[in-house]
Length: 422
Image 1 (cartoon, rainbow, N blue to C red):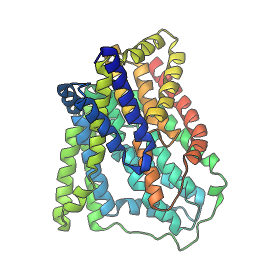
Image 2: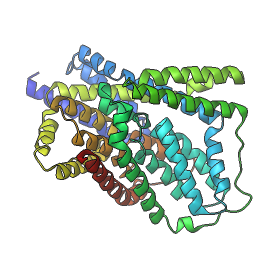
Image 3: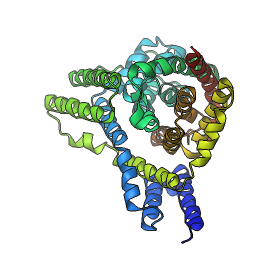
Image 4: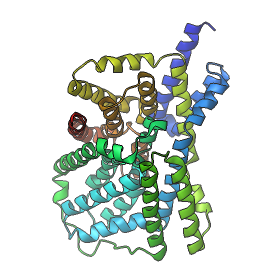
């Protein structure tokens, strides 16, 4: 096959695979569309098997991190940690819908920072939904808070979002440098997202919780053990990050140890925990690595490289805003996981550092608050709601996202510009 035809076919397969992943025709899971595209590239010899294998190997740290976080999240869920968090928030809300919103928002911040945005969007959401239903109030503001804080707080720490590991890959900065770069932008993102959501849902939050319907849950001894284990894991990961080590293996080992101790203490079978490891998600990430490696192998990333190099010739604040908003919107077109992989490769070949690299990560993490297609976590959040009988349409999310995301992003980018100018 002539090179031009081969390259064109490769790009068509990659683009179609990502489009079908986002559209999910007949509700067929994302992994089948992306996986089929990756296999088609290999079987049609558009990319060598060795290139596909190298692409899969690149994601080892991400796979280990995701698997570890899935185990920890399920351990916490099984032992009632998330139900307890939501219940405590309802109890301390003192019959105020607005106070409950603030408390659940704070809970979402803590879960996102310590367990990643996936845990907040997927695991905390059902617990929050159950609690607000028991309080007999409109659940919409509270479940929206779960989805949006999952993205808004996802760059406080490297462990707060798997996309952080994708973008930085083997060049993850030490914890101290990370906090200097992202703590202030994260704070800006969190605060502005809260203020805008609080205003957007002001009518719904003027409600009064019905006394006696809080469904207060108590944390069992096994739940306390799981919670202590989660705290220990966070400490281990912070130490690993401070020592400039990859986070995947420490996350996985710590999760195995904590889960083993808890299972021995509760005399429980590990089978339910293992069943909740989403191997399809790991396969999806691996397939995405193959697709992006295929695009890079034909030099298609030269366009993104040239665009990024051109931006570097602009004044720093202007370049930061243009790049930030371009990347943020692009998240919602091709999803932040493939975009994170593209960004990682573009940053590597262009040797981009400093402000623009920080801006790209902020936009990849925060951009998905625009629409439900922005990140895998938000898509899974939407599906979890549908299983609970809650129908949030893409238009419902977009209406809020058009207000929340741009305001939070411009504030976070301004904070990043300020940090990099000091």
